[in-house]
Image 1: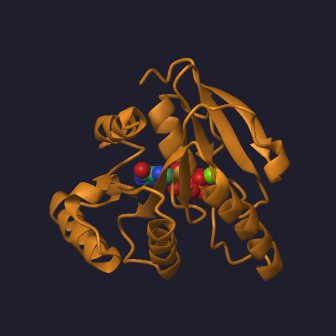
Image 2: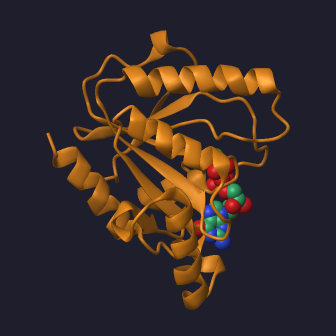
Length: 195
Ligand SMILES: Nc1nc2c(ncn2[C@@H]2O[C@H](COP(=O)(O)OP(=O)(O)O)[C@@H](O)[C@H]2O)c(=O)[nH]1
Ligand SMILES: [Mg+2]
C-alpha cells in the first residue's frame, strides 16, 4: 500500500456528510490518548499529519484520509475521556455506531490499546459489539517501546486473555520505533484484498 500520496479529506459530523465514494474504508478506534493519531502518523510516515492531541477529548468528527485509488482511513473520535459529558459521549457513540453499522464499504476496524494497561471494559465491549455486528476487527497493542521485551510478551498475553484474542488477532506496535508498522500494513493490505 502506497501511503505517500495520502491526504486529509474531510471531517464528518453527521451521516449525511459521509463521502460519496465506494472505496473500501478502514476505521481506527481507541480510547482518547491511547496513541491513535501517533499510530496514523507512523503509518503515513509523517511527523504531524494527524494532530497529536494537546487537548484530549475535544469534540471531533470522523476524519477521512484518502489513500488514492486504494482506500480511506477513518480516524474515529477517541472514546472514554472523563472530561467529556455523558450526553456528549452518547452523541458521539450514536454517530460512530451508526457509521459502523451502516457503512457498506467498511472492511476493518483497528482497535488500538495501550500495551501497558490491562484489558479495559470499553475496549472489550467494542470488540464484542463488532463481533456481534460481524464487522472484522484487528487489535493493535501500542506504545510497546515503553516496555522491555519480556514485559511486552507478558502484557500482550494478559491483554489477549482479557479480550479473548490470540496472537494472530493483534499486532504489537510502537509509533516511536515503528515496531509492527510493516506487519500492520500487510494486515491492512490483506483485508483490502479479500473481496
Ligand atoms: N513512547 C510512546 N509514546 C506514544 C506512542 N504513541 C503515542 N504516544 C504518546 O501518547 C500521547 C497521546 O498520543 P496521541 O497520538 O495524541 O493519542 P490519541 O489521543 O489516541 O490520538 C502523546 O503524548 C504521544 O506522544 C508510542 O508508540 N510510544
Ligand atoms: Mg488523536
